[in-house]
Length: 395
Length: 170
Image (cartoon, rainbow over all chains, first blue to last red; front, side, top):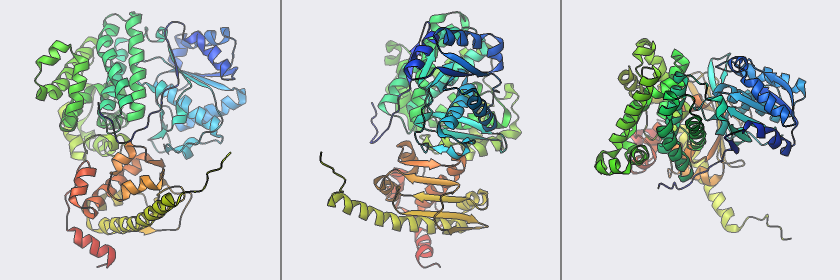
């Protein structure tokens, strides 16, 4: 196993995973000295009654829900964060629970950062590892999708609405104290969302396994994530009520999140972020489309890592039958076949052309992609022309 | 209880030597990018994409040598130290800065190893990183750049010409 000359690893917060995990948040918050909780979520989850399920669990456990904000948009912004922080202060809350997908949890990270640091604008904390430790605000993240892994990452991506740019905040102090995995919230996820978010988690695991910042701990997490996702994602689509598979997927997503939070992601995310920004392509779908093409691009630098990943994806007998020199390429083929099968079962197409992406946007996508922070840790240097070639191949 | 806040002579000498080297390399790097922003088409393109007035501070540690640069029109100029720079790159120790400035590791590897902290827009910083990578292709020997850069960019003219312009100005 690869051991870098130097690495750092920040563990995720305490993980509560499985049956009645939600009901244990209150007792954990009491240990953290909190009793007045502010809940963040989105409209859909509120209408589905999921926010009520959460509040019931919190109040039953003996903490007060002193405020809720359920209008977080899919693409949250600095302005939303600043507004919620103000409401939080008015409610005199002392802790935060975020229930939702990546946008809700990242927004909550922003709110917590602002409450903890003080002030009215989080923009002064933009950057990597510059955030100082300040007042501790207990924070639990409850993911409702199995993809972003945001409950276990030290990263928040929040849009600057005025400049139409996604700003990145990277700090160990963004990590939630509690990552709460309760499969009750994922069983109702539709097949398309399950597929997109699941393939997003797989991309996190594969990119983190082979990125410049990889290390023995992140690779261990990524390895477990890949195995869980390969084994369970198709079950979640064919049998949505399979709680065991849902729980495994949620754990795979969390592990992949922690892995990439420490070793970062590369070219797939850099291009995917740009496709999302320019063409509004859903993030998970962009990942699923781009992953095999970008793996082919990186193959010359990642051959050994991909050969190892292959061993997590197929049986030992099948692995032994593949000649050593062909294992890296075989891994790309196996991942591509897997992604295509999942997409087919969920009614998705993994071609850009089938997803209303106009070729005319490629220039702008490529120009933005090479400026994405994820490019710096991609194992192979990437030019604008390289990105254009990948987009053409994925069209 | 024994207090041990005195730095040993060995560490003091090491810090001083590294600070001296850092000061020299920062000067060469600044002059190199300034020259290349006028002469290398790729750095010229990157430089032109920066917003006018963009200020960048590179600090080799919290109290080590630093350099503050600003884009003023079509020129890159050295300015007095600013606490409110748009982008601030601070190495976590003089030892970490020394690794990068002496070509032992590249900027990408340094980022991967958390050798520096970055305050400001990461997207904007990517353009600066590309400029540094291209500048290193000129300023460091190929034996070194092949090891530390993910891709060694082709030189559009000779290294001697860049060094001549850095030190002699013609």
